[in-house]
Image (cartoon, rainbow, N blue to C red; front, side):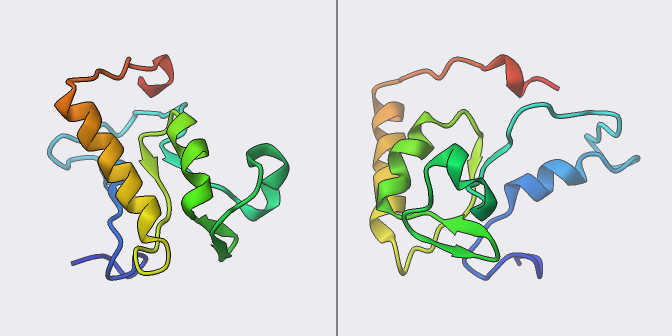
Length: 117
């Protein structure tokens, strides 16, 4: 079940990453650090850097719309935060099709130096 910080239709993989830093947990790396951007997030106070949100903002974070896809595809982040399937289904469907295409074509994504910690 999702934690209370996530809606019932959301998944929180970045939170799982943070939990791996707890000492004594199997697979933990308590001294690990992350220098890259784990999540692609458009904050309302940083519109000059990301070009604005084409969905809408909730609590200062962009809920991605269809016109945010190009920005997401160019992002080097591992995860994207946040989507609302019932309001912007095309955004999620297009990303799913892109991932399926890459998988079927056996495309490879080069490992980015910023992913290492």
